[in-house]
Structures are given as structure tokens and as C-alpha cells.
Image (cartoon, rainbow, N blue to C red; front, side):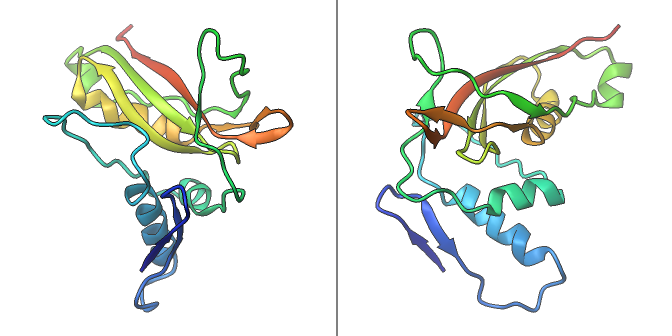
Length: 170
């Protein structure tokens, strides 16, 4: 059962049964929050969308963290926005998939990330990438990043920022 706030974001999500092993309920709630959220990014009619959910404890905890009430829509970072990018306080390096290294598959993966008001990465979308097999490694790394929350007029706000991960064989 999902309930939504006035902005269309998932306010609460509950499961019909609590007989799953430890951690499953939290993972399912995190999945629900991410998949039932309103569409921040409009999709073209012929677009495909992948759902990638790194099921590690930290990512699940971040996805389940409550957002402040009366949250504004994410602020787009960029030239002229007047908003300082969030400061990264935890970095996770992308792991180059071994089979792709052996086959010398390389390229860039550009993502748009929503950093929520708590400093967690809530939403990731590929905006450009030559090699789809590198997407998961980029998603997994960026989903583990944490930031100091961005403030506008003293309020913590979610922001949308662009990220590029480079995979090159040395």
C-alpha cells in the first residue's frame, strides 16, 4: 500500500506481510519508494528505462530515510543556477568489470543524479553512454556516494547534478 504527498512523492509504503527474512522489508520499501516516485525526468515515447537497485545496506538505509516535509522539487545545478554543487563526503570508485577490461571495452557513462535533502543519491539516469555494459558499474559507484546537503536560503534542498564516470583500459 502506497500513499502520496501533495507533490506526488511516495509518503509511506507498507507491505502486506512481515514474514520475509531480515532486511527484505526494508529492501522492498526502498524499491517501492524509488519505483513509485513521480517522474522528475519526462521520458520520450520510445524511451527504455532500466531499474537498477544496488541492494546494499547503506543504499537501502538512504532510500528509506525520511525526507523533510514540504520538500521543494529538485534544483537543477549548472551555469547560472546560483546554487553551489553539494560537497561529496563519501566516494565510491567504479569497479571496472573484469570481462570488459580483458576485452578492452572502454568509454564514458554520463548520468544525472538527484541528491536528496539528506545528501543521499535518490535517482540516477543515464544521459549518455557508448557501452551499456558499463552502466551498472557506474550506477553502483554513484549510488554509494554521499554528500553534505545543499542549502538554498538556509533550507536543505534536493538537487539534480550531472556526473561522468570514465572507464579506460590502461
